[in-house]
Image (tube, rainbow, N blue to C red; front, top):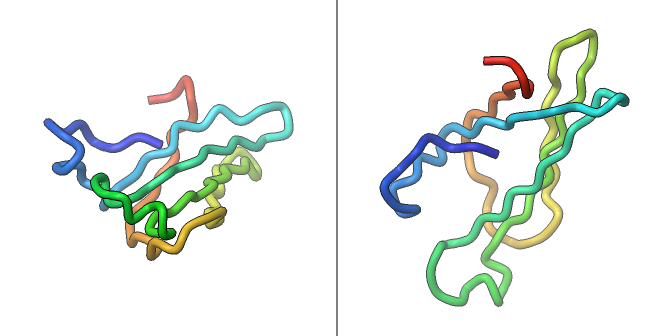
Length: 88
């Protein structure tokens, strides 16, 4: 997962997320994203989110799916796009 550059983590723009995918011979690529508040210990009580993003090529076009793996942090509303590795 890739975000736009920022001077520090508190200034990151989480509204847009780009997945840079390099699908294998089966046409599938996966990535994990861990999110929490960024400070404190609330993650110890479940205030975090671990998401698996899967990119599957179908007829040469990427399809994105997201699956919560762990944590109680609410799902963020964001635009997710895919850039295939080796393309611009």
